[in-house]
Image (cartoon, rainbow, N blue to C red; front, side, top):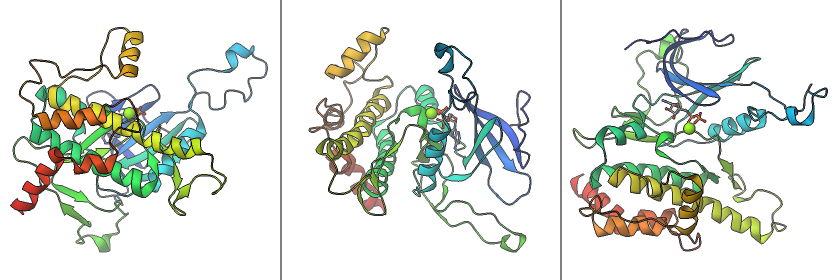
Length: 333
Ligand code: ADP
Ligand code: MG
């Protein structure tokens, strides 16, 4: 499948040949691309972010204050933070950063390609997922969150089906693809085979889009960011709360996988906001009638308004509905 429309040429991106557009957002276009120099064997995804007005205050002194701040601003610091965070991560269920550079008008974030695209489209395609397929997916998201929350000290803060991508083939590189010379031709990439789950299987799920993510503690010193000993209790609490934000989102994703629609929805943003604030959702009949009580129990422990009572990642992974599968997997192996 080659490109449908005409693909743009970006000055500064000559090395990469764009093949097709994979996604677009307010500030970014994402393309599938390949290395014309042949150093990277695998195709990549390139997130091209327009800079627009970089620093709203810079060179705008002659403007009326109302015009100085344009909402269409991509802050340089935010892009650098996204890249900096991704650079430190190394997990099979997280999209790897391959490279980063910028031109006058654009940032180019070069990423490990997820040829399957968004999980979102698969929910739409299949209407909803079976409990086994939902478990297969959510466990992978949870493994990534466990790594982020417990090892990397990072909260993602934007977990949703559009940011969950997948790799439909079985082979998953465990390390960032390295540039290869001709002498490496016959060396296989380091990686492992992760089984899908049969004809309806999906492959390896990977979390993408660290645009809103935040470092909550220093992974070097294993302490909260800032001066140890002088950290205020609300900061320490804030760290816990921000992790629980991902757990709520995980609950929303699991709910959506199982029935095909999100737990909270309303035409009016105001009503929707109120419903979320009160945690007002139901296991709507008839769609939830045949879904196990155990799955519902797990969802309800995530969609708990009080973040202190909401399940954390360890509790999630220890829930019987999750463990059922792991016991099966172990038994099958
Ligand atoms: P935004 O901040 O605009 O949401 P994302 O990083 O989420 O940026 O990328 C936007 C979309 O581009 C994704 O939802 C997905 O469809 C596609 N995309 C992003 N990264 C990849 C990738 N590594 N492989 C395949 N598609 C990707
Ligand atoms: Mg996104």
